[in-house]
Length: 116
Image 1 (cartoon, rainbow, N blue to C red):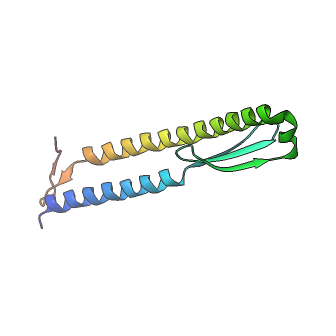
Image 2 (cartoon, one colour):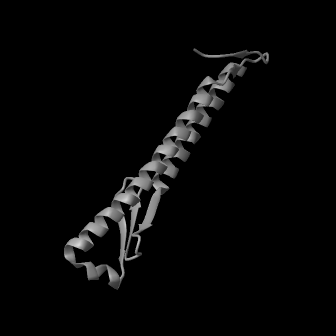
Image 3 (cartoon, helix red, strand yellow):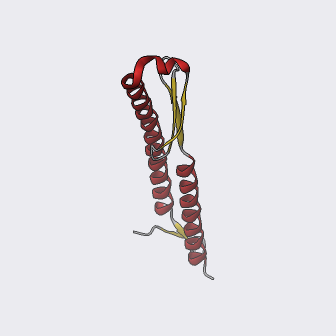
């Protein structure tokens, strides 16, 4: 195999590994937020789907509408944090993928070429 082909295959493997790591990190994103009074705690996954809800006895004191509002507001805050984490990962992934794509490939004689 020529140096250029080996260099290209190494790039493809690095891109595949980066994509796998991105998928793993995105699937691991979660956020847990508690209300200001710690009466409600909500956990969400990376898509903002609620995966956990904890209530203290204090949460029940605000009545059904107050409790509902507290849950929704706390869940929205957790979803925002998860979305921010996803955006950060996407930006990092994009930067690293661009870096791999722009890296020169090495020929068998040690010279390099930059694909367009």
